[in-house]
Every structure is written in structure tokens, then in C-alpha cells.
Image 1 (tube, helix red, strand yellow):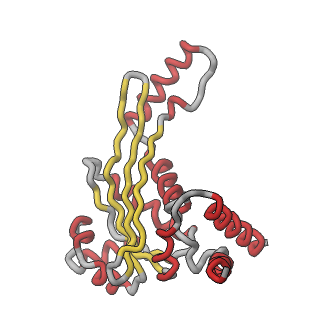
Image 2: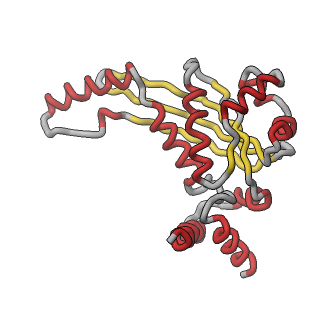
Length: 225
């Protein structure tokens, strides 16, 4: 059953590549590298919310594991980096990628920067917005992949009772709740999913994905034709 599902997934991926106008040439370095492991380093925070990097970092390993890549435990990574004198994310991002990869024996390094992480309140509406930049380099520091994702979420726009007065009250309450405690995690997971699986940015399946063998078999067939 898993083999059938994997075949279908790969077929859909290749069909999408054939029918869409999206340029998939960005995949060539990834196909050549055939990465097995990804070192996720501390997230660089360009916002004033000190909790933002922790939330983003918590979502990345699962998203990449779903794609079939081995990711190093983020807490272990943080501890080892600090033992090497890297206490700030900005310092880690400025360090030579080959040094970071060598510390863990990683094939590649993933850098993520948060450009926006805020909830904007306007009268009866609160919109939570995120803006993430992703950069994947190999163990020699050569860039393999780059993507940027911006998403916004407005919970008060999701439902309507059909009663304008009741809707206004509901919107005000929902907006106030979202403003007081913005729900960033679902938005962050969605951003990761859209980047790692989306058209024009999707990563190929990693070696621990059931789709891996069939994906590269189809790729070889395409090259042969």
C-alpha cells in the first residue's frame, strides 16, 4: 500500500512539473546533492518578539522529517554550538557553513530568518502576519535552495452567523483574543508546509521518504527521454 501511495505522490509531483509553468530548474542543485541530513541552526530574529525563534525552530524538524530528511535535535545543536562559543543566532549565521556542518557531520545547513512576526489590530480586525526566509547550503557553503514565505491569518473572517450585529460582537471578541495571544504556531506550520511542498519551492523527497526511490527513478527516466 505504501508503495502505491509513494508512486502516486511521485506521479502527481512530476505531472505538476509538466503541466505548470513554474520553473523547476531550482531543483537541479538539490538533485545533484541528494541530501540525507540537514542541520537546522538557531533562527535569526529580525523582530522584537523574543519568543518567535523558539516557536519557528520547534516546527522545522517535523516538517523536514516528513519530507524524509534526518534533522539533528535542535536542543543538542544549541548546546554544542554554545560550547563552541556561538551564543547568538546572528553569530551562527555569520559563521562559515563548512565549520558548522563539520561539527555535526551534516550534509547541509538550513538557515531561517524571521522578517515579520506580529499581530496588527484595526478596529474589529486582528491580522497575524509572518514573513520567513529560508536558505539551504551544502557542507561546503554552496547555496542549494532559497525561499521566502509571507502569510497572514485573520480568524474573525472565518465564520458568519448571518446576523450582522451578532457578527460584529463575535468579530470584536475574536479580534481581541487574537490580539492578546496571537496564534502563531499554525501559521508557522502552514508556512513551512507551503515552502517545503509548494510549487516552485518544494524540496525533493529525502532518503527516508517512501517516495524517494520512485522519485529519482522517474527523474532518471525523464533524463533518458
